[in-house]
Image 1 (cartoon, rainbow, N blue to C red):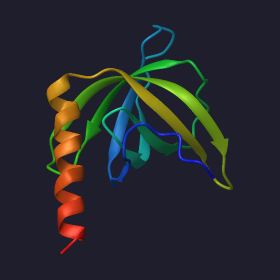
Image 2 (image 1 turned 90 degrees about the vertical axis):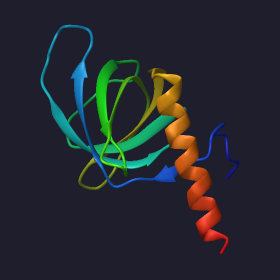
Image 3 (image 1 turned 180 degrees about the vertical axis):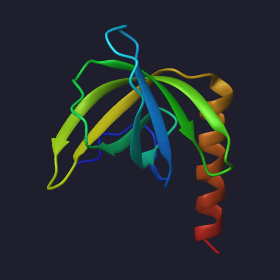
Image 4 (image 1 turned 180 degrees about the horizontal axis):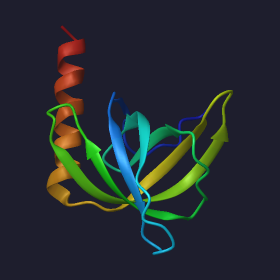
Length: 113
């Protein structure tokens, strides 16, 4: 299968809380982050979300810091007991994107030793 991602993905065990931006709901939903890159995030969730929906996200990263981002759902895949989603960051400060890139670089260097 041909890799179409523009940015390297890193697995990250974390949770994020989503709030839908459209104003219809402000329900917070816990999700399981599968991978993250400086351009997007893959996650599993039991709730049904829609392609094109935009959410406010609070992503807890490996340093225990919380990154604030706006994400848009671009992919949905039904799994056995959950739903896998892919989302792109449509609003994330550049400094936070650089934190993700720096972690990936450090991870690559430690894997090479």
